[in-house]
Length: 131
Image (tube, rainbow, N blue to C red; front, side, top):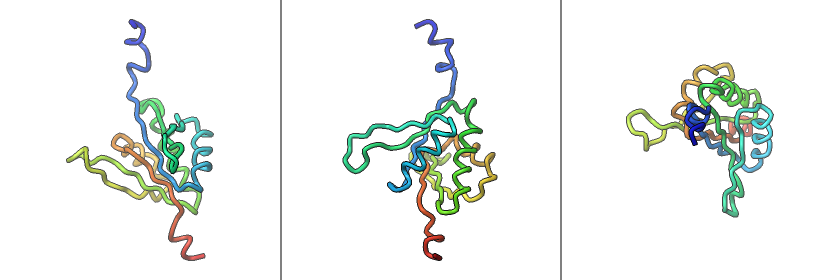
């Protein structure tokens, strides 16, 4: 137990961000994050409708930039849109949603990660309507 105090696990600032996505995108999004080595995992959920959900577990100081790059890299696909859900400064219980639009806004995304609770990935409705 004495070694735990000096370990990286004790000193790190670990974040968890849930990834909520359309069922047909779940496997693609899961594969994308697992290839980027950013702390991706599947969480077993005891529910028939949602057998597992996706999440990112990472040390903010060590992997924050990589996670932001991976999230913003999803925007290179033109058929999806990403929404970040974050706790507000005034009330941690309330949630504010922000649409992520430009893949080059990695620094802005990293700044928002500290209050991010979930990321939504869904098909881009504007692109579907124009086809």
